[in-house]
Length: 243
Image (cartoon, rainbow, N blue to C red; front, top):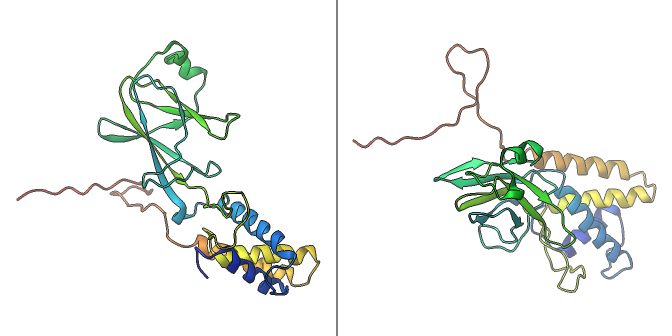
């Protein structure tokens, strides 16, 4: 019951949960492998998994407007951003990270017209552009007058379960919890067979999902200020005073 187990092990777990024969290389294996891959991708897009959180940085030069999404994270790993999950974008300007909001429209272009190369600092908004090529481009607004660093923080894509030829490979490892994926796949197989055990397996899968979601908390702490009748969230800055 862990993350980082191989496709082969999770396949065996699926067979155990669904009551299928455990002989390796049966005709079911290929389909089970595909279901595991599909189910893991679905689960990854259904929740912000903390262990998949990552950051990417892009250098913006003065005059930059369109950029290609980063393919390497801040740890130099070749891994992309999962755009199915929320992504926080910030710009490093004058030594501080400032939030960059999503969406560029008429109001923005009326203020600083990017088509006319009107520039200003700092970058305030961004927007994705899906292209016909695999790479995704994005626009920043306004066009920066000076160099800045754009930082993306979100969920990374899953590590692939396929080799360089695109074939599912049993020695490659899943990113998500093995029991979670195995239970969901087993319940789907049992449902297709109209098995009376399908509902029980699905309930176990959902229970596992909820248990994992209740893991490390990202809830903001709130503090009562004076006699206010509501909680106000305030960032806390630690200040050290030299003696």
